[in-house]
Amino acid sequence: MKKKHIEVWEKCLKVIGDNIPMQAYKTWFEPIAPVKLENDVLTIQVPSQFFYEWLEEHYIGLLKKTIKKELGMSGRLEYSIIIDSSFKGSKPYSVNYPASDRRATRNKPMNMPIDINKGKSRDIPNPFIIPGLKKIKVESQLVEAYSFDNFIEGDCNRLARSAGWAIAENPGKTAFNPLLIYSNVGLGKTHLAHAIGLQVKSNFPDKIVLFVKTEQFINQYIDSVRNNNQNDFVHFYQMIDTLIMDDVQFIAGKDKTQDVFFHIFNHLHQNNKQIVLTSDKPPVELKGMEPRLLSRFKWGLSADLQIPDLETRIAILQKKLYKDGIEMPYDVIEYLAYSITTNIREMEGALVSILAQSTLNKKIIDLELAKRMIDKFVKNTSREISIDYIQKVVCDYFDMPLEAINSKTRKREIVQARQLAMFFSKKHTKNSLATIGLHCGNKDHATVLHACRTVNNLVETDKQFRAYVEEINKKLKI
View 1 (cartoon, rainbow, N blue to C red):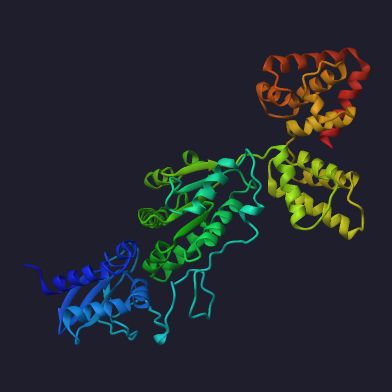
View 2 (view 1 turned 180 degrees about the vertical axis):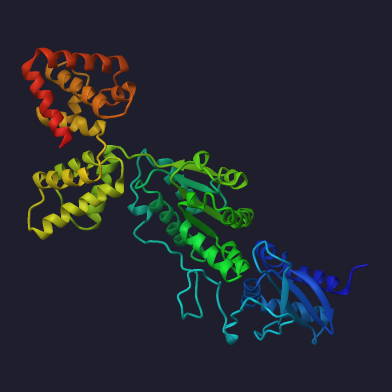
């Protein structure tokens, strides 16, 4: 036979379930356990201080009406709040709070202070609290400049961007949950992650969106352990509608942080909340991760951002200049896009250096200034010479358009330039012969090998040709 307090609470749950959305019911009422019923006072147990405050803030009216319906006008509600000494820690004990009365009556001494703000209500307890503020809201931590409008699409990022846009239109309801965006540094992972969050906020203003760096998440968890309020920490993150974690690889090797993130991840995923992660490696290369967490990273979509091609790099620079209202000669933009190929952040940094040099020294931005600044910048960043850059240098040297070197023409001077581009690409890059051929007029590896042999033979037998090779080689090394 069921005990009276269980029967009363089950009746209350039926009424509550008919008056709120199913998702809210599962989140806020299924975890509650009835404890006792004495003198028309029903005591219910809730998982944490945060959980109690959320019920008081959002559902106290419904709870009061339901209790009075089942117990009469004298019916009252009291909370028993579980207090843990650690996340997995020792046996919990409880603190009883009457409903709508923030004065606590302790039935055991506590080693954890509870801030009940002397009757003042709070929103979600936020790890991003500014000291001195009592009433706070969840700040998204998103950067407005990192929007989809400012994110240039190309073949290098089309899959990730399309998935991000689909998520923003329907967060938590697509097959891309979680979305893991990975790439080397400086290729736009963080920008795209912010863009997704900003678009979600734009489409769904009521949703709670949070961007958090993984190092920040780790530090918050450590603080929660130190302050014995891990439950509040977990429940805060479980309330996020779209959680974006940047550089998730940093939790590798941190078992306790992975454990708490595993529970947060599960809760969000099961409740159709969106998760977006960024990493510098694909899931298969993430070492030091628990297998159960790693398997969850693979549930949705893992999309990489590749090194942008020449056209995309030029478009990125033009977009930035347009946004800042600055005009710059196209040949300068082109030279910059050719010179720095592997890191968008470095390319934009070089652009800023050119602008600063021009402004401070009152010099016109031209190709000579750009070469001086970019070459200095590239030296400092250990430039990796690209096939595109080699073709640019060769074409400039022979004063021919870049399109010519990739055409099918058999004119002697163009064939010779193409062979030189292949020769220097083999010498200065790590690309395969097949890749070099693909970039040099869609030729096969045998053609590239023949070109390299031809150049070597001409260097030994033709003095003028040897001078060409030496001068071009100097330009590539400047």
